[in-house]
Image (cartoon, rainbow, N blue to C red):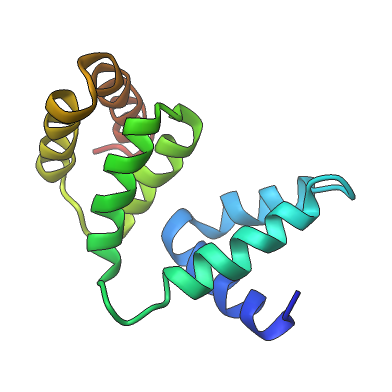
Length: 125
């Protein structure tokens, strides 16, 4: 692990997902899953999220669609919150999940809407 790249990724990860969640994830990590925390922080959150080619808002659009298509509700919940933090509106998130319904399947979209509603309620929006 490159400590400098990890720290850059950690900063971005906290800005998108929230420091409380990220700190909790790292604190809960043990010898088994800490290498995964380091990998995603250095490579996902630094090498990809910090690239200049796309704005964070666009990356959030993409993540919502891909994670919804993969039907990964835990990760989707995190990234709905991150999308809001990156400037997406409820209406934009709605449009992403409607698109998911057509191209990835109605069950994936229904689950995505359900997860998003939970996040909106938690965030008071």
